[in-house]
Amino acid sequence: MDTLGGMDPGRLGAQIRALSETAAARGGSARTELIELLGRHNPIDLARALPDLEHEEITLCFDLVDTETQGVVLTEAAPREQALLMLHVGDQGSQVLATMDPDDAADVLESVEPSDAEALLRELDTEDAREIRELREYGPDTAGGLMTPEVLTIPSDALPADIFESVRGTPDAETINALFVCDGDVLQGVVSIRDVILAQPSDPVGGWMTSEVIRVSPDEDQEAVIRMMETYHLGVLPVVDRTGRLLGVITADDALTALEDEADEDVLAMAGAGQSLPTERSVWERIRARMPYLLFTLFGCVGAGWIIRALADGFGAGEMIEKTAQLLPLVAGLAGNIGMQSAAVMLRGFATGEIPRSRVRRVISAEILVAIANGVICGLISGAMALVIMTDPEPVRFWAVAVSVALAATAAGTIGAVLPSACERLNIDPALAAGPVITTLNDILGFTIYICVVFGVFELTT
Image (cartoon, rainbow, N blue to C red; front, side):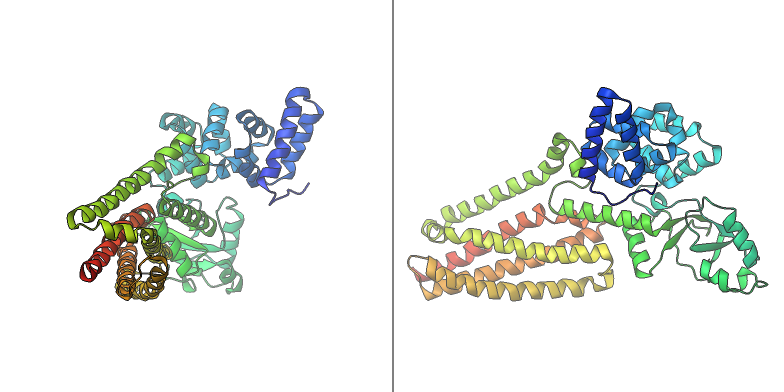
């Protein structure tokens, strides 16, 4: 029977729950129905449905599918479900790991204790265990952590017929779209399967291979890997060490997964909501992830309030504060939005490689000009609104509000553009500088500019 794919995880989870409850109560036919349901659907869809199930339902479904399907489910499951299933299978986990690609097996082993992982590796074939151990030495966010060592290599003197024979004899290769030519283990060139088909039968591959091969080191950050594959339209990217020895390859599907992870982390960090799988974490874990950002905002806003009070007490500006307090939310909201717009442009540019270091100053300058223009426009509108809102409007106060809003917007745009760039140069995740950090800094600076400008005008007109 063909396997269905693309089903909504919630709907599939509801069907599994209904049959699991019946199977637990009656067994027999209900259990058979559950097995048939699991067999009709793609293992990836089963993995996506696991968060909607109880622990007993997850382990029951896992036990009812074959070992190869178990390997796919484990590969695609979230870390919490991976840990549960690895604990459930215990010593039998090595059988499931044996069906998985080495890079996927290395990722799954991150969900268990190091001692348990080593015990499972000892049960595997020696070569498989060696490959997985080597992959586990690389950081999960590096090229080495993304690559798979299962790559088909061919010698430079191989003929097209030899290459086809190698392809037929290497069913476990991650991909055959790109074939890498090596002398020993050292990468010399690359050919596509199309090149092999079109080549003359008597011409060795060394004569028609592409010798200029785009490659990456195993320690390269996965963001750089993603940008490289996107820039050069690569379906496969080889990973080599300092001597040129081919260690493995990164395929397009692995790069897409990494891209999704990077995007998720940046969005969550920008919002101050943590950096990984928030919906898979417990309530307490979510609180701990978000609280530092909220505390920063809390104390930052207290600081902004202190500035307002200090100005009021130190300069006798109580009357001014009373008359202009209704406009303070306007300044805070406008400055925060302008700052976040600039930060979003910079963050996207860094993430996609659109802003290399050679363009950073030019992009920052453009963003500051945009902030100035937006600030002037919004300032003029705000000044006009102030004439309508204030109980004793005067033309000079129109200009006070307009100028202060324009300056606050310019400062916010500058912070939003410069701070992510500074973090990028310091090798700090720029997303961490966005969200609560930029918003709070903009509030403090915006309030200070607004009150100082308006206070000066009040002093001149009273």
